[in-house]
Image (tube, rainbow, N blue to C red):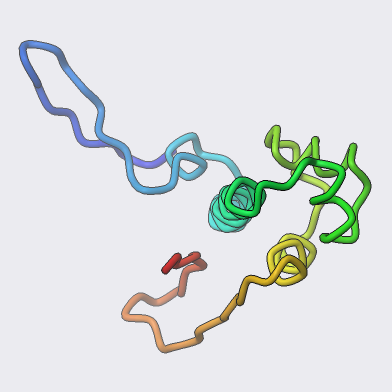
Length: 114
């Protein structure tokens, strides 16, 4: 588990986490889980922006309605990052992957949303 910063706010001790709750919890593959959850958040936003039912979203994304239901409920453990990216490109969203040298010894994965 990552070391979290302690602060006192209004007399209450608060632990301030990082931008990755999966890492804060000490889960393996935390960066991968964060990327997948960020992609799922964008899928949910896309479904809402387009006013799609789960059935219509499933058709556009090439999935079954139960699979869409599972994904939007946060059950995406058995769905690859690639499939989640496909779920965004099929209804008309662009997904870009940027690669650049890291300042750290080991790079990181992230999703940037415009």
